Image (tube, rainbow, N blue to C red):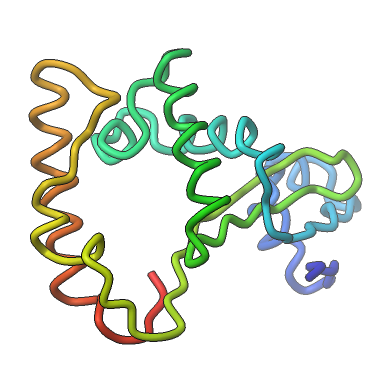
Length: 164
């Protein structure tokens, strides 16, 4: 899908592209064309760059992706790649600025089109989740957070078709 330029929404598209200040400095400049497509394993480094930048200082980032270190990034890259290969419900999207080829945004959707009653989506499995990419107090906090998050997700979202 391509997001096309519309004169009336110049500010909105520029803001989405992260170039709002350029549009305000140069009012005659049209914002970039943004292209959304499914991401693949070659896009993971770009996605991680966006994640670590967007969620800087947020416990959510550490709990799910680890610290912004080469080791944590490598671990996160492995887990994302595995989810792309084996998790049919995992849909990673990227938004690329067509003129520069620069990735400006991304998202991770989990699409469950039908009932999935597998054990790995149960509350008991969620309560056993291990955060093997953090250590010490960070590991304890991360596991509490992830286990609570995933247990509530299992309780309220699984067992019927949904998108999260």
